[in-house]
Length: 465
Ligand code: UTP
Image (cartoon, rainbow, N blue to C red; front, side, top):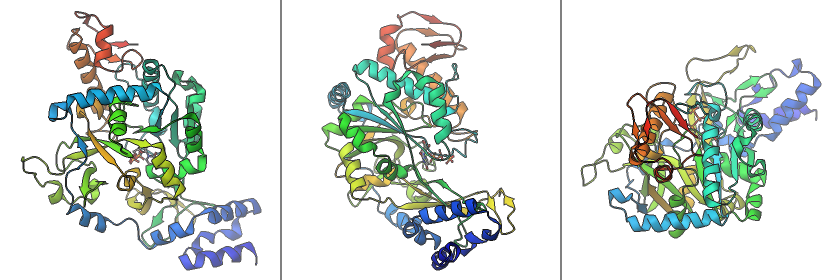
């Protein structure tokens, strides 16, 4: 059989013959490229999606009706948590860091469409005075943590076809922001095509399917393909701190979080903050039938989100910050078992070529994209600990161009935090002065207090390096 007919026969049961519409126009190299792409698609995985069968909102809504606040929860000392337990956990976490048992995973494969920045989001300049990019702030934190632990900490950075080349080049040009090049690994997640309302895969070009990163849950498959889990094991890594590229306030490799996770014998732990309102667009960390899970805000019906608990506060109060700790052994188990996280679909605007071969860039959503969420691994963990975090301190995500969770709110949040640290150290910061604290200078209020003498005055903009 000739390759065209062969492929047409394979596509027919899925209703995707249109992908060969331009065949007669293609030169041999282009034909080869298109065939290769079509052969590489995991049709078993994709077929149900074409018929609209993604992880159902329906089912999630039904679960939301039974959702209760998280069970296995450690609250902050100021909210009734045990201060001694936190102190013990911090110390234990520091020991694990010192012993070289901890690494960090950064997921940086997203397209950052809401921010509307034309480069990988990690390159976005967020330092309120320094203008340092997100990537730099994280690397400086890691360097600060290494200095304190007296131990190197590997950084595993997940990229996608949308971000890989530029991210790698940027790190190279910036000399890995002072980290040892051997400690920084990049690995690429997979992609999935977008599908129109009729279940037809959209073409990006006559020889190429549309492709979007397969969600942060693509981490599992990406780890498998890259072989990095073995590299980690060889290095003695037992715990992985996971964070997202959009939150510069994340405490990278937070010793207290890692310590709590380990002391509780958890396989996957997650940090939560109190939602600011029922309507906040933030996933809720809940327990359903005794298991911890996260329900995306879009799957939480408004009246359920607004339900009040016995104390008059939101019942489903715990908002997902997307900061997690994984046991290496847990990730390995999921990967070895070939775990496939559910695919969720989102209706988005996807540029493509139409049936006349013209390129269209729709202003309105026109197609479904499919994504896996790493937090869908939570119910699979044998122990899933939920740890409360202080929102002002640890949660300042850059999501949107304006309004909530935008560069303005994040920079203001960082400046407020640094001002509090300085005040705590006994320094005086004049109202108009903007002071930024590099993580290389101090990682937290306590470290800053050791370095800035009480009574120091700050009258103009400064970056403490
Ligand atoms: P978001 O869910 O905010 O998505 O990602 P996004 O793609 O960055 O932004 P929008 O929705 O297009 O505006 C949360 C985190 O997960 C990573 C992102 O890089 C970010 O750190 N992510 C997201 C991936 O690594 N891969 C993906 O496929 C999606």
